[in-house]
Amino acid sequence: MPIPREPCEGPIDGKVMSATSKDYTEEMIKGAHEVLKFAQAIGATEFIGTKSPSCSVGQIYDGTFSNNFISGDGVTTALLKKHGIKTISVEEI
Image (cartoon, rainbow, N blue to C red; front, top):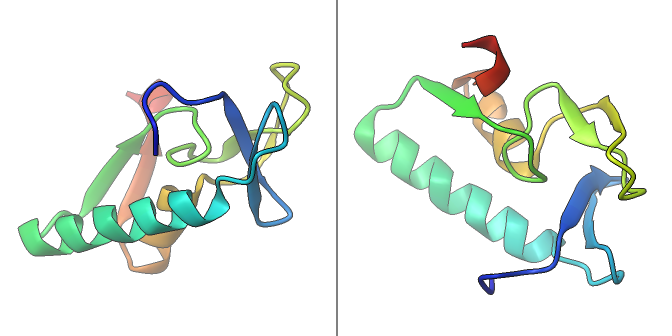
């Protein structure tokens, strides 16, 4: 993904969208799989996430770009959980 990139929110209905409606879902999924491969390679058992479309734990931005949250996990967090890696939010530390 480009750096810097447009702000994104979600995933909402499985999509990660930018404020200008660009769909970043595929890039987020690809990145999540790279993180999973790395985590498995080093034997990681826990992940600490922060609020983002990729790393949110338990709460995601609601897609309105108004700083509101709804229940959910970021793309990477959800994939790591699916593969048995414990996830916690940086706010829990």
